[in-house]
Length: 331
Length: 82
Image 1 (spheres, each protein chain N blue to C red):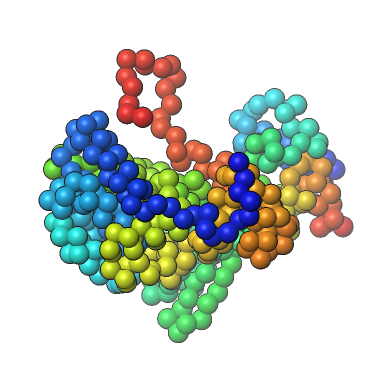
Image 2 (image 1 turned 45 degrees about the vertical axis):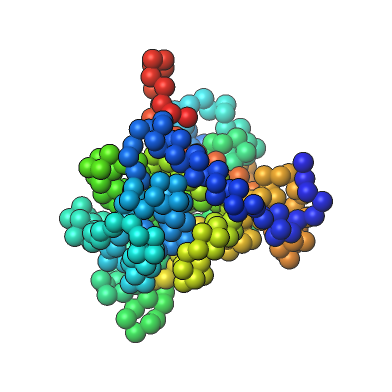
């Protein structure tokens, strides 16, 4: 049923009830269903992994949560620092493993830079780069531009063709997949379960890497809008510096907001758009709330559906040719 | 150039549908609505158009109006080559 009027208040939640429910479900899933002894959480210093770690500690106790700091060449220095602060604040055991040598060995940077050279032949290792999404918010088809910056600060940007785009994304996907490999090593070693940290916006819109950060045993906040995750962070008493961070990808060497890279709008507006779309609100209501045109609101709804459709593949498990009825994974 | 629709239909059948039924792609079939091509596929289609007809598709031209059916593609390509 559609609400009378769309305001940011639609995202308000009973923080205590939501926290209690997540903690109860974590115990059910991890202890009863999956029969693990604790939880592994990779800490990026961002709000989602921080809240997931805090919920894990609240559910199982600090002695049963293991934190991982997994920086690489393009990570911001701040992210490792923030991740460590969260681990120390929560009192959990944690280690750091720099994954740059592993990424180097597996060809992550080489494959990426090879693709970048086909766009900008003068590109060098000391330049910075990022991807920027465009098109969909204006009613066109989504495409990606590569932005590079020389050491002197000069920027160039160019649209990527499909081969260039897919090779850059495939190469950078190594980062999420190597991290997940390390998380599962520690999970196996400790008999723990692995936490996935997507929020609802990321989960719904396919903003994750298949078998990378999309892989996990439990996802405590995948049903929560990003705005609600921020509210939870404050309720759970996480440090201010964590509660005030802006969503970044921390994947490319140029600072890059998630809204530049993938989403049509900043998260507060995307949350409202997603909520409104999920509750059948007319585009006109969204337009009024966001201060955009009715046409743009329609494009936002269409973009949400397009991303769901394009990324359905990322959610799917292996499909069997014929069912094996004797085997039924946890729901 | 004579039959742009035929060329593009063949490309779509070979590349996206792996030799499926040509009748699935009528001249006015919307690729997006019918789920024939997804967002990444549009980028592949743009590369095909650029390589085959030897012109650059501008950022602002990457729209459903220009690319979302065989008829629309033919009209768009003829306009660029005129």
